[in-house]
Length: 355
Image (cartoon, rainbow, N blue to C red; front, side, top):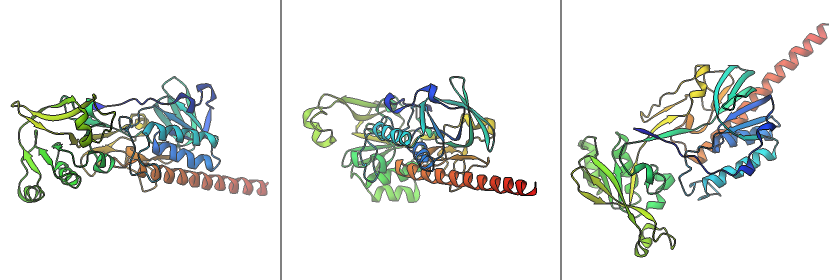
């Protein structure tokens, strides 16, 4: 398995300059994706001082559009994030490009270490750095990732509807994945690759739904140059002719099975190394296909004052879910700060009365 990390092309105009960073903030948000920016927006609207540190590595950077996002369906991921950064800055939040190497301290007095050597104080921390997709070591997969090699039927399924789809076995979830993609196309093949041949109820379901099973190790994903006549079936439009497209799956014995898209379930690993000094380490997700940082429904971790939102804690969250999770965490952090400030005010008042 290998890590697949894509650096996005971000708009520098929607970032603040490094010298604008203060010494301390109410909240430091680590990660400038949908979850992090949504949390920062909620906090900014609550008149909290917020710093967002964005490494510029959104998981969905290779995708042409973010889907199932009400009112913004199909928006380019980079455009969505540029809008989000501008909105956060509109409420006084700071958004800087950079990476966080570690978080130390305790609730009310965290220190966030940046890769450029600076440290920033924070009363609360929201980690929303997402995850890394680990793909099988099959030549061609990484090059086509986010184009015609996909993983989620809800994120990308409509775009590959009615095409010849191959599902690459990577674990027990792959049979379910094949059935999900069968909803979108009547030409679906499950390639067992290095996995077992489905038996029992799974085999019956695949057969009943017309999903063919092809055994043998997959050696590579093949590509070809798209012709003008093929654009009608791939949905790439007039600009599709002349560009590379996925053309098939080659087995170890040399057989090439024609396919137009391949679905593969990745191993998902949370980007959370910077939380290790606090004792927060990724653990196996109940699904068995990911590692994540556990949290309660509001995003609060086992470390007081530290919240998480998005794929770092919920590996299967789509953009819409991540936006909602970020907003929930942001609101909860603000409420937590309000409660802490009320307690401090009561104590101060009691102290002054006693004098």
